[in-house]
Image 1 (cartoon, rainbow, N blue to C red):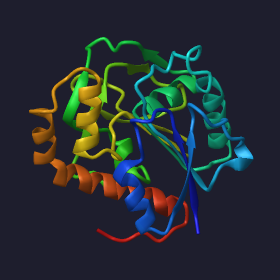
Image 2: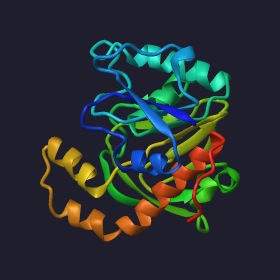
Image 3: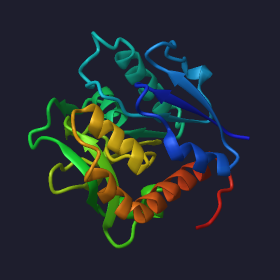
Length: 235
């Protein structure tokens, strides 16, 4: 049975329904609460790793001293070819760890809601993203103000939006995505409220397209499970 280490930076950013999809594949999860637990060593990681999002910035290492050691851990895990997913803030921390640049805030401001992403040619053969591509477009939930502004030198760009170029990239065994395949409409709406917004009309807009978004998230979870050597359902 495969085990995935979940690195959670923030109480409000949980694995949400992505955990259900991994459980359907027989995968167990070990969650590290980075605001109170020590950063694990490379030998304490499971068969795969998922780094979740958070409200803090990738530059906030003084207030959140786990950020730098997590970056080192991501580099070491990638060097050992451990399959990894990084969502939202995780996408930014991974880019920064490998020499990319994160703009705080991003030059075009907040990007939030259900957004259509344009996939690159590299995405069509990516072991995870290719599982959800229909043509060259993918829809995902976004909620971010900071943004990757320069990719690491060895990264392959996988997706862009009209607001931001660097929405997904791969570097070795690690897939970083700014959108949130783990998040339900309710979770994205809670983030919006925590940032001072109103639940509606955002929640209703997310729910209206959630069939498509949830399908993509489930496919990403199953493709990641297959990278761990697990037989995942076909959908």
